[in-house]
Image (cartoon, rainbow, N blue to C red):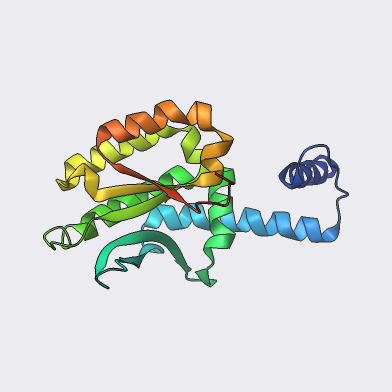
Length: 199
């Protein structure tokens, strides 16, 4: 129990920045237990394919006022907890390594749903966010996308991967080969949260 608590304090200190220390307290224990419960419930949700769904946020042209695309956003409706905020489950998915499975679920569903929109003349495609952690495992994303594109028979440029500016800047040298391989696949790349990383 002592080692577990010390481990929790260490990870909390790491998330807060370098050269820090944290004292373990009851609030920290409650947060850790909450994250463990969220991770366990998220694993089950990803396995049963019913609780995780895609919410589409329209992308509108300022010139015409028409919907020209959509951003596919992961949402989770838990039977026991109701709607779970992405702010609560996305960081848990990233820390636990479940983010790849979550991304695969969203990409597959978005690809299937987009078949109905492909004939629309103004509709440019679907945007999907990829996380900082996924940027480190870009080969897996490329494999997932090439398989999905082949299965769904959709044009590669119908998918746009949105990458946060801060994540790209933090790992610019290591990210470049992976980003090139995604570009070679034919998918579009887009910089999200532009300006927040002081480009």
